Length: 190
Image (tube, rainbow, N blue to C red; front, side, top):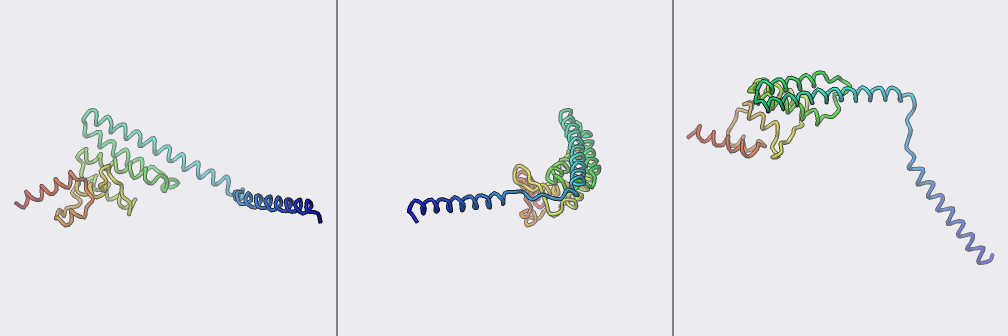
């Protein structure tokens, strides 16, 4: 065999190996398709989820507007109304969307609890905090200061009645609230 034929043969083999490698690599990029049988049902379920979340968001937006009006007009009753609207939004959310947008829903429910506190309705704030903990058990939100929402609201509503130094040290509270609780405890005992 001539040297030029040998080089040509090696080039063909190298080209064939490269082509085979490229084809194998590209074959791995083909997405797996699902059967057409689930297509329409899957789409219908997604549509129902999207519709439920759209209605939920519109409802929560209405509650936020009521709270903004209450802040602007300095009316505690507006905060209570806003909190009730948020409760209704959560209650109206159907089973098709119960597991969607958990964090968004937690934040809205937390705003409702805070609105009850602003309205002076501590009993409903405590009840909704209990519901929050049951519904989103094991999860918490964090305030801009890094403090725990659940710990902070528990102290503000009086749900957490043990204000001993050891108990307070274990709570993740905003620095201002912690200082106020320590000041109160000091003057209570001295």
